[in-house]
Image (cartoon, rainbow over all chains, first blue to last red; front, side, top):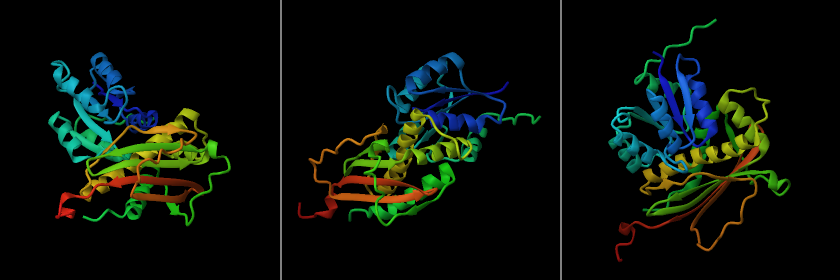
Length: 128
Length: 167
């Protein structure tokens, strides 16, 4: 079964850049503009991987992670942080919340895909 | 511990963000780009930096034409693409956010731990409230793909206790 990937970022451009990176693989990509919408999408779609920003209005990435880990049915969801924030205290805090990898913006597609491929099966789409 | 020199930190941040995220390069300008003409049309992004020993703002200004180009490069669109207004404002915020992240990481490496706020964007820069005397300012201009942009930092550094043993 193809993986579902959720991109949570308040920047529409970043969400589209993430979607573009995964577009050449057999997967479903969904988006959310903040942690609150991200939680809703996670409950609805049960994504295999979340690519999560840290600084967001309404609900930030850490709060979304806390709520995710507190939910028995969602706490095992794999998460990669994708954020401009590289504060060591933040990195430690999200690592304690079970984040599997941490990418600092700016990012390259290949870097994101390499880390994602360690967590979910990415099968290239068949070329026509 | 001396206050970090901002110019090389900012230059490295500009290079890293433009080359990694947009596949572009920047050339430094000797003078700040003139923004008086069409000032209201410029895009502005601001990110607040806050920490126990460093705090202030990082502000980016760029013209629409450069925002069009950066959006196109970020999304793999034709170079001549025109971005929507929300996308251009988003670009101003995210570009500033990435620059602030790189600058913040360098300052953290120099012992000035910091966090960043959510980017604020506008088309008209509000007058800065200059109540606090920022001890460290930096203003620089560059061209990217032949188009100018500028970055200004207004930061206040608090000395480490070890810097003033008499206290």
